[in-house]
Picture 1 (cartoon, rainbow, N blue to C red):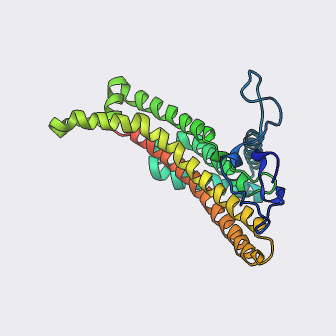
Picture 2 (tube, rainbow, N blue to C red):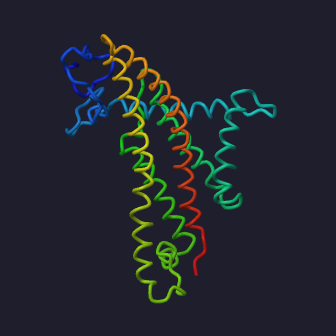
Picture 3 (cartoon, helix red, strand yellow):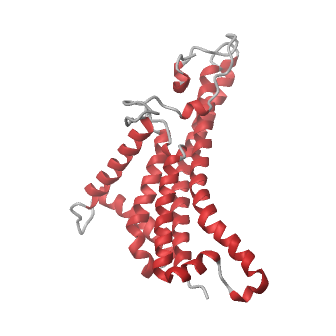
Length: 274
């Protein structure tokens, strides 16, 4: 096996079935990376592979839309057509559907940026050499969810004022009578604490689980390449292909769901409560 347990990949081990060694299954060590420079746990800054992929993802998204819309044409070229289709999908398919055109237009740039950033952080999982979904590290979904949370809270109190904002967050409705205090406590706890937490964890958990399964079948394909195990290695490799195709679908779905939830939070903030 590789001497460095933080870098266990299928092609880095000589361990095969019937060789007297155990299966080098994926685990938390599969999500740890040595710094490209600097040292973690010290006062100095450090930079690792997920950080690099997040930075490259940002550059790619900005570069793509800059190239597509920097000099827009009345008759769009192929790049502009692709960019317009992506932009329009988020604007009409998510923002307008949730918030309406009048209220939603001002949030379109934020939601488009959020969608494509989440999507490219996810899709790194199936890109050769990169082969890692950045959102499988909880810090990245947490920061994105925090950004949505800040927008949501600011919209809530800007639209309704302090007292009205509290009523909005607590689901205040005097017609509920005696159960109103209990409902307000539950709604406040759900909106202020649970929602942002689940918003981040939903994205993180799906990408963490998907990447673990891909690693599992990839390592198994290599591990079984010995003796009669070769037949099973073929089955495992087919599963790698199937899981890769499935992950490509899930990556887009998770970006869609993340932005859809963000829009639904803002929609709730804009709603009138009496």
